[in-house]
Length: 195
Image (cartoon, rainbow, N blue to C red; front, side, top):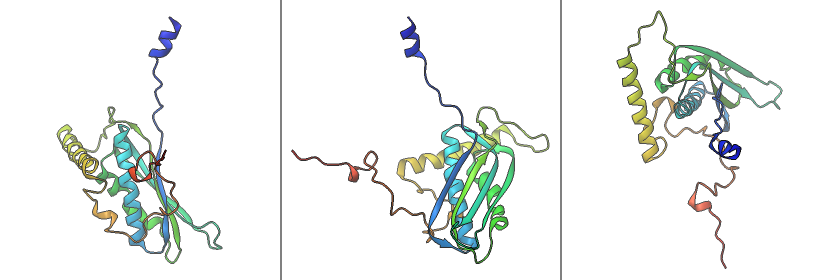
């Protein structure tokens, strides 16, 4: 009887308290436009993760840094509160992109950026704001639009529907030359054994 009870018990992962998306650049950047594109790219990915986990974020932190081995090390972060917690990419971009000017320092070669989604809550329990009108109809339309974008990207490949804030073919794109082979997800990397 005890064994049957143990088999029925499911292991459920605890909901995440924060979601972080960060990457190093393929080359150092010193331009505010490129920093904004990088932050936007990370925000788009973080929004996808939030929706995939059925969560919303109530705050967002963005950060950047130079190499710690340089004599003029620079590391900076900035946070914005989202009045009505959201996983809508448009809302997340609107909250995060104005922060880029606060973390940018001209002529400093930045090698890494990232975003952290904070104050995460379950999608089912949306905490409304007393001073901000937000109708259920408006909320449903926003969710339908973002879900449609996610489904198109899932069906036809990542970035089929592309956010302009991420830039077109950015030169700063992430390092991928040292990635390990993806033998479980790419057919080209599956080992072949000949007998």
